[in-house]
Image (cartoon, rainbow, N blue to C red; front, side, top):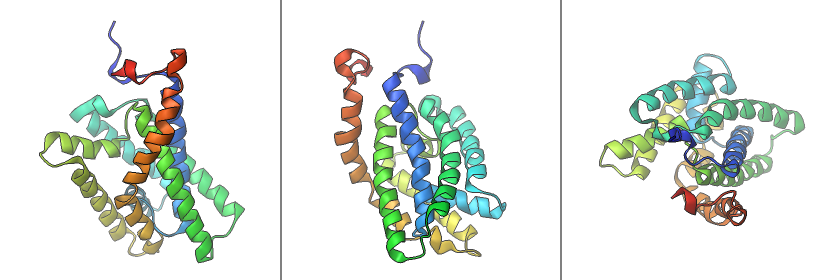
Amino acid sequence: MEKIWFLKKFTWRRFFMSLIGTALLGVVVAFLRKSELGSDPWTCFVVGIASLFNTTYGVLYPIIIGILLVIVFFIDKRYIGIATVFNLFLVGTVADLFKRFLDYSFDASTIWIKIICLLIALIILCIASSLYITADLGVSSYDAIALILADKTPVQFRWCRIFTDVVCTAVGFFLLLHKNWQATVNIGTVITAFFMGPITQWCCTHIAQPILNAGAGNGKDSTNKDK
C-alpha cells in the first residue's frame, strides 16, 4: 500500500528534527521581539494584524497560518507535511510563552542587551531553520506561498521569497504606524530578509545534515533511501 504523501519521508529522526527546529522558531520570535530591533517579515505581518484586532501574536498566528494552509492544500498539497502541523500549533504558542519568560527574567532597556538578544535570535534562527529544512517533512504555509509562486511562474524562488517578505513587511509597517513600529520593523527585519540564507545553508551542511546522517549507520535513517 502506497504511503500518504506526507508520510513518504517520515523517520523518527526527521520527526524530532522538525519538532525541535519548529519550536526553536518560536524562541527566535520571542528574542527578536524582546530586542525591539526588528522582527522577521512574517512576524512583522502577524504582529501588525494582531495589533489591528488588539490581540496577541500567539492568538493570531495559528489563525493566519491556518487560512494559508487551506489555500495551499487546494493549490499544491505537496508542501504540507508533519512540520506544517508543528508550525501551525507550536510557533505562536512558544513565542508568546517564551516572550513572557524573557520579560520576567531581565530588562532589555540598554542597546547592548538589545543587540545581544538580536544576535542570539539570529544564531538560533539559522540552526532552527537548518533542522526544519533538512528534515524535509513539509514547510509552513507561509513558506509554501513563495515555493508555489516559483513553481507556477517563470520567476526564481529567491525573488518570489523577497516579494512575499516585502509584502509582509510593508503590511506590518503600515498597520503598526500608530504604535512603536521601530520595535518590529528595524535592522533585524533587513538582516533576516536578505542576509540569513548563507549562514542557514552552512548550518544545513555542518549541523543538520550530520545529525540526519548519524542514523544511517544503524539503518534507522538515511538520506540515500529517501532519494
